[in-house]
Length: 82
Image 1 (tube, one colour):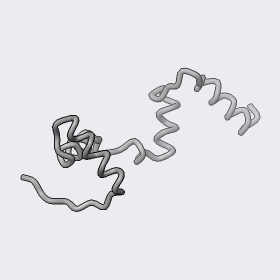
Image 2 (cartoon, rainbow, N blue to C red; image 1 turned 180 degrees about the vertical axis):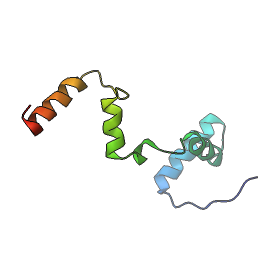
Image 3 (cartoon, rainbow, N blue to C red; image 1 turned 45 degrees about the vertical axis):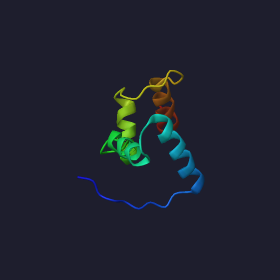
Image 4 (cartoon, one colour; image 1 turned 60 degrees about the vertical axis):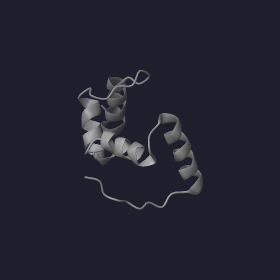
């Protein structure tokens, strides 16, 4: 079942969306529907700072240029003088 939805969007963005939709052979509505449908229910932005820190500590977040263990040790040394 489909439902109408009215959006207020910048005219240039609407033009761009129509061009993209035409090249993809889809409607703008279908593109928006697919995009929204692809988003996770709980966005990463919903995580609290504590959740993010826990993930870093537990090794769930990595970055090739950052040594998290060293960074953690430096922060603890700065904070507690260890």
